[in-house]
Image (cartoon, rainbow, N blue to C red; front, side):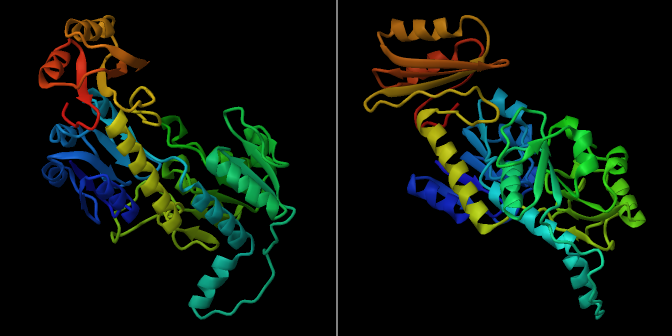
Length: 400
């Protein structure tokens, strides 16, 4: 079976798949749809990062494709609806780079409050401007964290260790870490010396932070955004940086992000005490190795056993594997009578069901069976003929 990995995914992933007996093709760059349609033919597993778009045409070109792995957090460039309709599982890794992002957040807080980045830029221009004006210790200042999940909570711990007071706002009820305190969003805006955003890419978060929010921030406060580019109005941010309302900003994500090596343009360019980075908050060697290991392991587990836990598009189904059993997986539209039809086919062939599990999600249903006989071609043909069937396979098999 073949694995296609794009965008310079960690060599850890290549090693895992090769040790599992897969033939691996690993490319450094992303591919446009037309190129990818040609490359993906015959692949059982496809791995990408944040640049490659997985369209219905790409999925249709790969009938043997069982799983797509996003070796990153975001899955917005993968057509999950089309993946589900073809019975292809999509996996990502929402956690492995959280420490990398949290550490960069803390580093940028210190650089902004000490105005170190601005001083460095002046030095590169040949200017010597030794001054303590506008430079502050972080100890005793208030950090406002918007989004208190895996990353936000780690930032909270690190900031407290530096002596900062931490307040946070989250739409979910979450447990505070250390001495951090949950507050309303308006209170956070008005009381924070630094605000850092760690919210997700849901459509409702578009333009989350704009003119009104900047108006309510403390004079001289700093804003950090290492979450999603479209959550902040960059024109409004630039305006308030120029006016002196804000003391600084650090931005790692942008509404439009070019390919590597292409020209970049932003209203934030050229402003003092503004740190701009090219979407690298989670890009450390440690994070990429962890992501490479995690996503590859999830896809290998899915191919071998059908375990779909942590898939972002399929119902979450898990059945402990018992040696000696013969595993069968059936993905279908969630309509009445599917299990009865499957069970009747098995019973007519005098096949005993030793274990089974079913889960549904929206219009999808997913069942895993352990049966007492191998899955022969005629059985698979009958099961694929069951109305509303999307995909049927046995353990380790990649045909739909």
